[in-house]
Image (cartoon, rainbow, N blue to C red):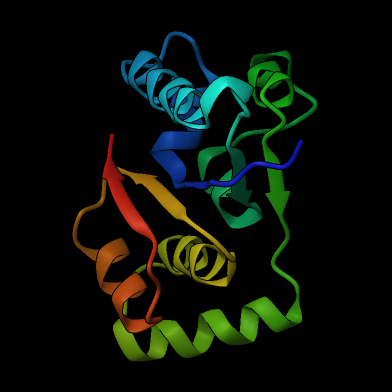
Length: 141
């Protein structure tokens, strides 16, 4: 059953979800669970996306046993292909921000339907989303 909501994780949110010892692990997990409960009796888990640039910055190697939580939750990588890179370059040129924040915003802006970005950055990510004319919501972790 397809999800009706998409979550896009930034560096800290991805680290928190992957590592049960991370101080924000429980809060990120609780948010994901709350999203699933909002889907009604179906309890459809939200689609969870991580731009590959985020995985590199967060040092999340999918082959490592420490990242098994990402696999269990069906977290999907979003590769930075040429088309996405061109859109991210244009967005960064207009709004600034880091490469990783720009990739997070590009992924969120490209997704159809409701999107929430889980991030600790309440400056650059919202500005990038606004520049991209995205309706994505930012949830602070």
